[in-house]
Amino acid sequence: MTDTLYRLAYYSLNALPSGEDTEVEVRRILEVSRRNNAKAGITGALLYTNGCFAQILEGDYAAVERTFETIQNDERHTAIVPLQFEKVSARGFGPWSMAYVGTDENAIAETLGLARAEDFYPARCDGAELFKVLHGVLLAQERGAAMGVHAWTLT
Ligand code: FAD
Image 1 (spheres, rainbow, N blue to C red):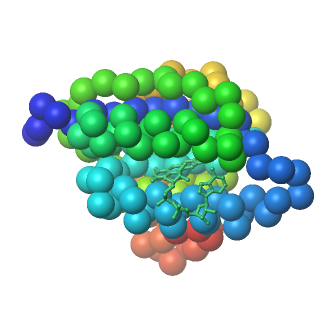
Image 2 (spheres, rainbow, N blue to C red; image 1 turned 180 degrees about the vertical axis):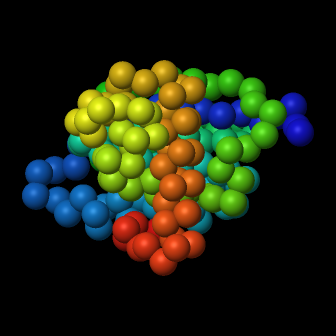
């Protein structure tokens, strides 16, 4: 346990120009994030679904704040809404400098106990719910990979 560990959760709207290949762009974001976050001691997960991004960043207060400032200035998304920035006792995404949670809306709906995948929209979540979704879907993804099910293309 460390008393300097913080978790930040936010969601935003995709602002990629129409026609832009979203998968290629998300892959680019992940590559840069993994490289930078590993150096900064940041772990977390990124979700892209329904035209929205949602992300969890965990790490030292200053590192999370600095990274989030950079992310907020990125024109590839807009309407950025922080949901949580608070001290936590342990990392939820310890092994991942930036896990990609993907766009499997059915897995998301199942994790949240929603009847329909379309009912999930990050703007309706608070920070704790967003953490639950990203963490739950990531664990389902890991279980699928262990069973040889490769439904996730951007790992
Ligand atoms: P560079 O090496 O300078 O750039 C890497 C690549 O990204 C280049 O191809 C460059 O063209 C492209 N790029 C950089 N900035 C932009 C921009 N504003 N618009 C279009 N293309 C651009 N960064 C992190 O370090 N950690 C994160 O967890 C993280 N999460 C992100 C989540 C989202 C939803 C988005 C949209 C961005 C995220 N980023 C994250 C990226 C961040 O906003 C910066 O682009 C990045 O940190 C710049 O790092 P760099 O200077 O090392 O990249």
